[in-house]
Length: 323
Image 1: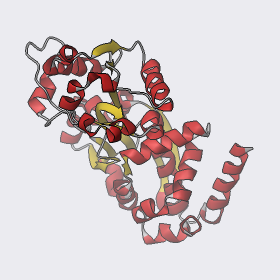
Image 2 (image 1 turned 90 degrees about the horizontal axis):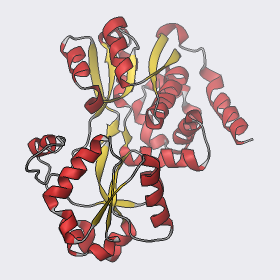
Image 3 (image 1 turned 135 degrees about the vertical axis):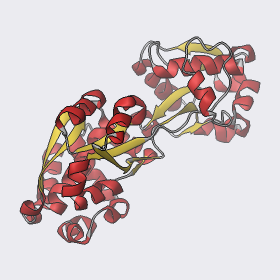
Image 4 (image 1 turned 90 degrees about the vertical axis):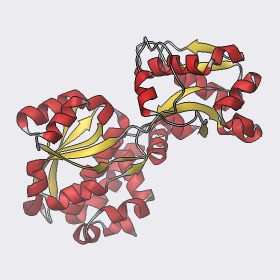
């Protein structure tokens, strides 16, 4: 029944303007990446393009590497909505240098986040735990354990080097290496629901960081050279460094930028706070909702956040959502 209600709401909002500007916009292809945050960005963007600008939008199932290959070989899709630069690497840099793509801006603000986290209730009760020095001076307050990434994850290399750099285990904190992302998330959930200590690595936007109020502790300053060195499993002398925010971008083909400047302007404005996206992911899981339903939920409940993304004509077309 919930899915029927959401579908009806979506249809009702869309009905007045479905074909209004179809001839002006035409066909648009946009990535449907295979992770939830990108899928929600695509669902929101697709709705705004179709109902605000009259586009005929096709969501193309993809992933980072295939999307870069398709852009290089076929100049498609028109829009990549959530490109993690640290995953795309040289392929993105090469396409940009060749002038095949245009970077519109950051779709996540401040981007993908990583860190070592504690439940906020623990930091509020013991403010000294807000820094790594405070944590190491009070291992019993954090449960005497650090919850580490599974083997094979990129964060595992960095964490292992930071553990050595801080001499974490010498402070009396045991390192527990999780066997999967599921057990890492479950350990956080179980501790939080029982208001117990939990200390470990996590990243966002993710469902757990949307469900649970967590605080990223201060690991000191970010040092780009040190952070790069800490990604080497054989780093001889690792040093401390905070995690940087990972750039997460929206890109379009150069041809699309020139042929659809109004849509390019829209997509340059589509930006979600990383915390907001984590909360959307949590809502989606709590309600067993689809990505499209999460998009409707965001649009109906956050008009102040997205109303500035669209032009005057789209604002008129989407006026029902802005009331």
